Image 1 (cartoon, rainbow, N blue to C red):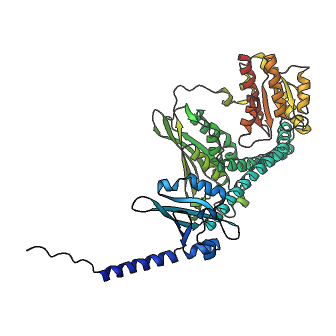
Image 2 (cartoon, rainbow, N blue to C red):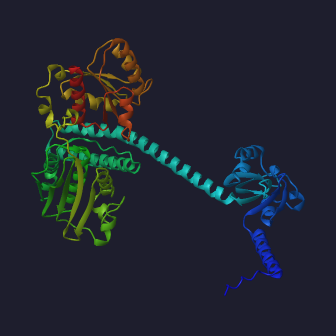
Amino acid sequence: MPPPKAAHPSARQLERDLLESRQIFKVVFERSPAGITVTDQHERITAWNPMVEKMLGMDRRDLLNKPVQDLYPPDEWKRMRDLQIRKHGMLADIATKVIRKDGTMLDVNTSIAVLKDNDGHVVGAIGIMHDMTRQKMVEEQLMQAKLAAEQANIAKSVFLANMSHEVRTPMNAIIGMLDLTLDTKLNDEQKDNLEVAKDAADNLLSLINDILDLSRAEAGKIVVEEIEINAPDIVKNVGKGLSVLARNKGIDLVWNVDAGIPRQLVGDPVRLRQVLVNLVNNAIKFTHKGQVQINATMESLTAHDCVVRFEVIDQGIGIPKKNLATIFDVFTEAHNTTARRYGGTGLGLAICKKIVEMMRGAIWVESTEGKGSMFYFTIIFGVNPDLIRHPAHGQAHGQAAAQDGLPDEVRHLRVLLAEDNVINQRVAVKVLEKFGWSVHIASDGQEVLDILNKQAFDVILMDDQMPLLTGVEAAQVIRREEKQTGHHIPIIAMTANAMSGDREKYLAVGMDGYVSKPIDRQALYQEIVHLVTQRLKE
């Protein structure tokens, strides 16, 4: 028996279906949140939905048989033509503009589909427009907010740079004079008073450095060096350096270093020391009796990396459990009264965290309130068996040790000091003369050039912000003239500009070295000796 034939829809059913489809299309067309236009083969508007009238502020008299070209500004219409929509058949998400009846421009996102008959001839097109005014406004607001944030960040950097320079200049005079005075014969009361003043000045300088370090870290401008590092020696030196501070509080400071840690690794000795000093200083500050312990343990060693874990353990006041999660945040102290009672800004641990993470490590803390704290951090050092020693970064143990074995030429240097601040001149001259060197002073960049035309020097210490010619301008003139003579005199930038990138700026203009103010006497000595001896070997 053959299967039953499928029933064909009746003419009445087809009519109902068509009517229903038209009704659905009409609802979609009229209620669509997008503007829809229909054009004929001559690109004239023949149909549109209510949203088009709303978007363009037009009615039937404005739209019927209107060339669609008239909706667009000339340059936008040319761009639309260049897209060759008829060739592609359809293009979506075209960002463009249309002209409203009142002459204002409307940002729209347009999609266009070309209509063709059975023979492939174009008979019209359908365009769908979305009003992008709100999105454009939001984008503009976001752009303005971004620009405002960038300008604020630039303003902050300029402010910090200016404040750093303005504060460091008098700090150089204060700390320098205190150091020089402490080298003289004093009675016990005078020495005690000056040491208190020196300690306060050092604390103020430390605060300035913390603020600058945090600013650099947040801007991603802290540079972590990859040079030779002796981690065991750094731990021992930190311990020895801070043992006096601990002893003055009646606290024992002990350190244990894993003998398996290689003595030659690759990392940043300055930043490692900075983290250790900060943590040990905190441990001593918050401990009233008992001991503070520093441990360094090798966790793993491969042909390329060495992971070392450092521990700073104290028996101090401890940290409340509720504060452990935020202890490494900026301006955070374990107790509300901590800063008032013990001093500090709450910046130190935040800086430590950023530095440790930049050295491929992690930092964390365990603590019990009233019983003490245990700070841990790991650092991944590089391993290089063929390390070459970098003398400029070497650890010096006092002046005599640094001078041993140096040529006679370095023992009697002729130094040209370019510095316009009278007090800073006095400080620098006394420091340099203590090394047995002769010093000639120039108060501005032009005077530097005039003096060099008459006398020869072994090294120039160059401030930057000076009248007539800045230090940078003077250095550039010197280097241009040296191209004719073939001579080269080491120039060291000695400046209160100590922001991220300042060292690189001075080296880029032809200077050979950099020392920031307030002047560290040992750092200045090392930089001069390194550059002069290097020059003598050439």
